[in-house]
Image (cartoon, rainbow, N blue to C red; front, side, top):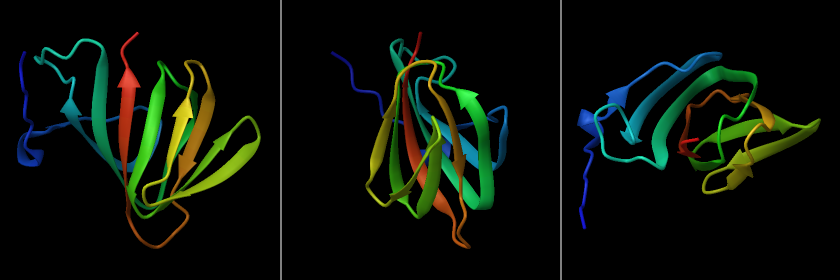
Length: 113
């Protein structure tokens, strides 16, 4: 058994295609890590930030840590607030938008397919 700690100061920054005003860091499952089944990222959405409509590459769970974000999928719009979560199956189309004047932070947990 192994315990792997990632300090936030050591988390790997990366860019996600189709994201504007979003600053993600990879907490688990980054390059050179032994995590093989999933990734965990912390994404910070500035006011007005967006993630374009795109399919989810794997099973995905979002957990809103702070702020408020709007999710759109299959014509349905849902506003998530602190500690709310949403699950997407692989291939589900979704967009994300911060429509507030405050930043929002969200955990992204995704299976590696």
